[in-house]
Length: 296
Image (tube, rainbow, N blue to C red):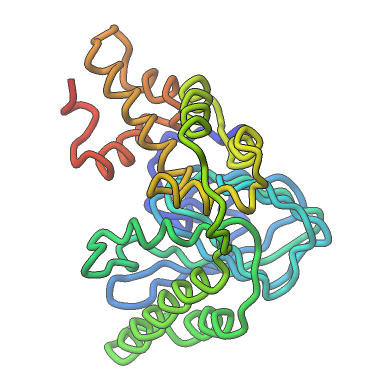
């Protein structure tokens, strides 16, 4: 996948659609709630639409689907029919790759990771990582779809009443995503990964950190299907494959920065598999509490 190159830094997918290469496809944008949360509507022709990694989760609601769709945002490749009212969830910090065969339209909701915070998970990151089953493919849920539509219709006006309604609806939406993630999570209690397999996976990841690595690639090494691999990897290591790859990329970046090899941070970011220096900085800060410039 070849990502578009950008000089600007985008706050979220709504900002990317408004100011980036897809600006002509955006039909409307709203801010809902007191936080606020950005929502946008878009209509696009058939074609290939790669998006850069952005800090928010993105929940799509298809309003006009496509006969053939191909999705990949780090949870494995999916191919099928994208139907009206299908929902699709893109992880935070994951570049997405979408190809659709027909003119299509959708509603997008940019969900900050912090919206999923709990007393045990004050940043919301661990909760968002548990949505692996929802990241893998489009899904359907009438209640969640209705919440998205209602937020779009009723949550965009200024005023305390609308903000209170939108905040309540957004809370219901995040709670529903948690419920769906638990309900759809695969159950494979008897399957695990051996220490030898985990070492082989680490060796393969480290050898390809500068490249794009998919769940399907790692699943093939482990001998399990992509649909089962994420769950058993999380059970064996305590984190998702995506999070594990990010941690190894941060580790590699720390080593290169400490070595003071003469490389600039932008070159180090690419050598470690980040899409840009800004992407590396965002991940570095989230995982270590400091920026790459503060390392070494």
